[in-house]
Image (cartoon, rainbow, N blue to C red; front, top):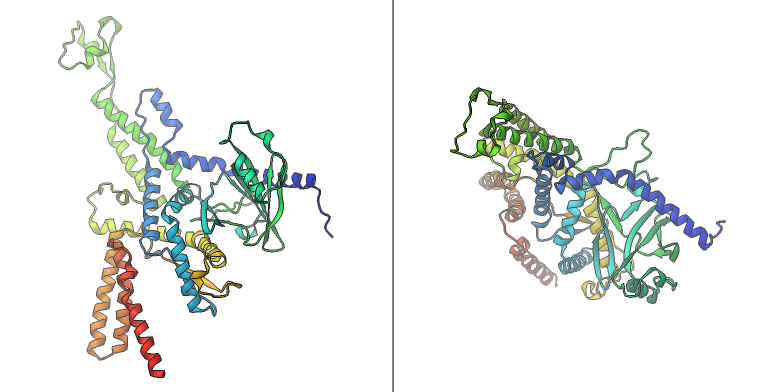
Length: 513
């Protein structure tokens, strides 16, 4: 029999969980900040170069590749009319699934999915993990981005499914805390001593601690300045956080600092190359400057100023011209070769070539060579997206759909009893992946040409069933091609199919009648 803890013991226990989970985050914090600094073009090296009057340009390679990937993710997830389709699964009813899809479409239309996902895409690319809080709030589903520095995971978990507790750092004003106390969410304890009299916008730090109890049942407690505002409140919908990555994190042997919830940022291996490109590119610029404006050694006794040397057309008088010496400039060609090698290595590491970002084609590459490079990079991007779907997008929509089914307006479900959630699964609309648009378009159109030849062959031998199958397959490719060509609301263009199906059903029922 478990002995119930006193309030002081409970506060001490929760404080220990906060400290333990924060320590796990601190082990990764420097790596997170390093990639964020690279994206924001912050470097101590360029600051040192600036002090020495040298070229100090930060070459934004990681920044450009991250922005390219965000553009690709937007093309992948937002080129279709729907981001996700709900489908029947294990004896679920087609009728309720259709009603459910209509409800999901309504609520996704009410919230700006594009705006919500932009910072989530940035998070997964720079810190390796997207984290969202999915709840039902004031009659609407709500998806909130959670910063990596505002949530701390159980550092003892073996994997994401094994997480035993989660600590969420939140900030509230005095009025927000009082409002929650009036609604009964928080205990009525005095908190005025932590706020100044007229400081109504000041926000203070609180901790929501989510704990797993009895398999998959979760409770939440809130701690503020060693005051327990709520204690082990059961969560009917489970813990609200969804997190996922594009790459799994490698657990090193005997690594005691490992936190399983974090993924690996796909740009982390590009950091050393970014630093080296900054150094080499700035040295290259300095070398070119030294050819144009070489360093000159002049005896002090000659009385020639720097202004005399740099002013065009101004004569310089000297009794001994041989005393003037020019320091030999460095070899520019070798620096250029080093830059090309670094560019090739950066492309290999990230899977994104300079041509993907609009850079001019190097070495007179043909269009076919460029397309092959783009396609190879697209294969890696498609693999990133697949893991992102499995670990983040699909779990997010699973919870999103569950909340809509439980709390959505009755008018969407037409009196259907919603006591038990039917089985379902999501089909995430990602098209053919994050490949270059021209490559995707050419591939689909080539496939359609093959289908056209097959159609003619089947018709010539009188195989109507196979020919009809080719028409259906060609229609699916057309639906995939039109968004690439910039056509929106593709499903509405094929709405006549539903009308034909309804007419056929009505004819069938009249015949049976």
